Length: 118
Image (cartoon, rainbow, N blue to C red; front, side):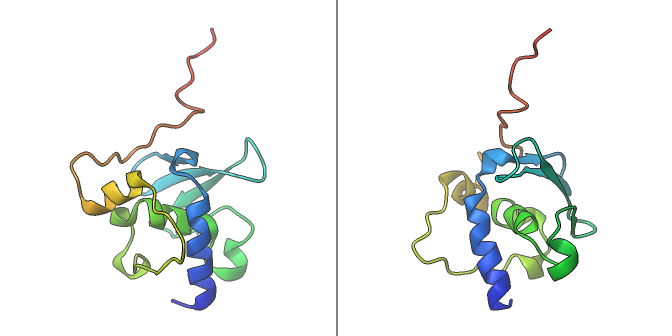
């Protein structure tokens, strides 16, 4: 993996798990941190994201976010571990990586867990 890809993958840890919507094992939406209310669509089968970076560099922070939070759902070649200096791995991710039966595949999302207002 190129150094710039490792840098992008390391920055993916800044997107918390509660901003990732896991629809199934291949489709995700990730809430934008810079544009509230905007979501990026990720398709792991096609290795696509609808953000502006993907066409330019064929990789993006959003795909990397899925790789770091859901490594068990990504192709083997894209889930090589990288050493992160001074990074703290969230316990939910550590649990998911350990293969524990308690790992949660679909994290709670504040936008979806709100009671409906009828």
